[in-house]
Amino acid sequence: MGETPYFVELDEALEICRSTTIQTVVERVDLDNCHNRILAVDLPSLVDDPPFDNSAMDGFAMRYEDTLEPPSTLEVIGTIQAAGQEDDLVVSPGQAVRIMTGAPIPKGANSILQVELTSSEGNTVTLSQASMKHFIRKKGENLTKGQVALKSGTHLTPSRVGLCATMGHSSIPVVQKLKVGIISTGDELKQPGEELARGEIYESNSFGLFGLVNWLGHDATRLHCVGDTIDDLREVLNQASTNFDLILTSGGVSMGDWDLVRKIMEEEGDLHFWRVKLRPGSPPLFGLWNNTPIFGLPGNPVSSHVVFRMLVAPWIRHTTQASGPIEPRVYAKLATSVKPTKDCLTLRRVSLVNENGELTAHQNIHQGSGNLASVAMSEGMVVLQPGCEYSIGDTVEVMIL
Image (cartoon, rainbow, N blue to C red; front, side):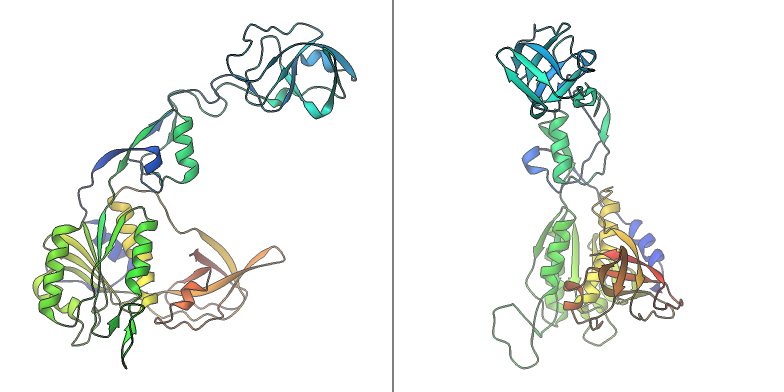
């Protein structure tokens, strides 16, 4: 790639990442196993929805013109509870059919009145008001056979999986999940639950990254923490490049002598860029290790989280041609001061409050890049453009966490 770009704009970093992709695989899975997956094809409906005119209410089906002068008393000629029952019923003038929600509309009927607006005696029903034509759900009013309801790249939420079933699909083609290996680095790291000696901290980044990978619909594996030796790091990277589609490292990417991920990538890897104009999270790197894409994320937990959302997630969505999931963006008024930076896109953690119908953003927690609580206890991050000044009352863009 020639000389490695250093301290690049976020858009440039994203473009560099997008130039490196991996071959994805399509597999067919049944509906029980396609939640949170990425649809691999445009999916047409195999049926009309509804497949027939049906009742939206429990009540009576009748001719609308017989109900215009309530109260109206009609002869009840039968009952339809479900599809296929008494399909030979024909509603003539002065007649009605008892009908249940979802049951097909009998011939001759063109309206419904719900049961609570009627009174029955023997084989007659008396209506307290005119019947309702809009309580009939028309054949194909939701979907028509052959209509593409879900596009390739759709993130399959529960409602979308339900729609697949409504369209008649028992299984669908989805993008095979990427396998992502997560490596944390640093002699000072201990696993939660272990005793801490002086100078040691609990490793947390891999747990958050694991959840973010799963959020995107892919499979993550937390590998063991690597100490501060080049040989150990090389061995784990070699193993990861054999077993995973993507490698995420945490820590070791800054400018110090013990930032070994940066060092080994500069000396032995294929480094595509290092450092991005992003706060928090300026020292990430991207490249290839044994032809496997690798993102080197900062060790500070907030920086790690921000870099994943701003760099790694867009790359995964691009590689899998996925349209989601994404973080919603909203606009809010600043209720407290926020501090941008001169040359970096800056994200500050904020709480969002609805005040008299207006969304306001409050920065009320310490913004240090080591303070993971500032992410966990906030609803969003304000997106501050480099070199801009922001005052209380200004409208800002907020990424919802």
